[in-house]
Length: 85
Image (cartoon, rainbow, N blue to C red; front, side):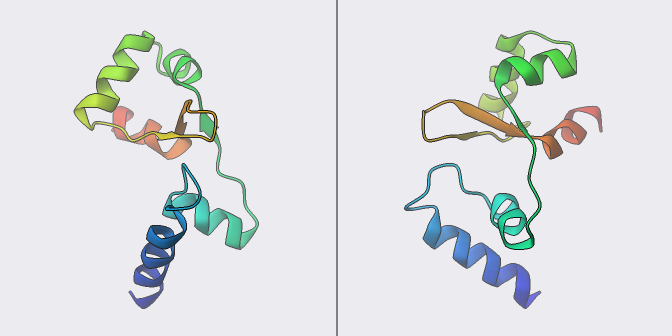
């Protein structure tokens, strides 16, 4: 439990300086693993739906996305399971 709290605290502090930093990304950077993310178009293709549907899911909070340094939304691979259940 202490490890999770430390990661959340570090993420909160670092996210002020690095756009799109999530605890998942921070953990992957620390462990040397890469977190796969998708654009809204890529995510729509994987989910066999339209881009507006992906944006609706984002707006409704069904999935989470983060803007990268270019202002583009990136969606983590782990969000797929939220839709597929």
